[in-house]
Image (cartoon, rainbow, N blue to C red; front, side, top):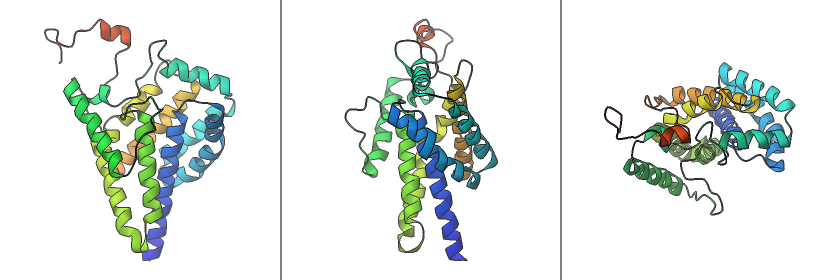
Length: 244
């Protein structure tokens, strides 16, 4: 009985790892190699894994497969630039701090705390990457690492290490990704989204709601839509009657 429970835990941890990896890669710049991996290996793994989680996530991953069916590399790149490119207003900002902080001091503390999580598990984002520590891709990749390590350690003599990974997942979701991630994915799939990112948004939102429920994490109630740059410039954060 204990062995069967451990085996089930392994499978669920691996399933969760597959979803985190798919979402991280689906939000990365879609060069030819990444686009191929997302369409094939990563999506196949997630399709097999999602039924071990919940029905909403499984349905959303199947919808993502349909959205990817006719997507070529050029269309994927065009959708990425339209959504996240700096040459035009971003449809959605892929960083945690704009959702959960209101001033530079909070932002600095948040970034330092995220960096502390990464260092604790020997993670150091590559120097050539331009993303900040609070970028959605880095946070998803970190959760992929934790879930994959949990799956490999669960059961037998390494079960204590698996528990450390589970505790870290709970803490990171509670302090960071679980507070804003579902809201980011909801915005990603909102008005103006391409068919591809609408499907990614649904899959991410459903999966992170599953994760929040699994660990008893409450999403940030104040997680907000991010102002587009032209709107932000026209707004004064210290205006009378406005929020700081």
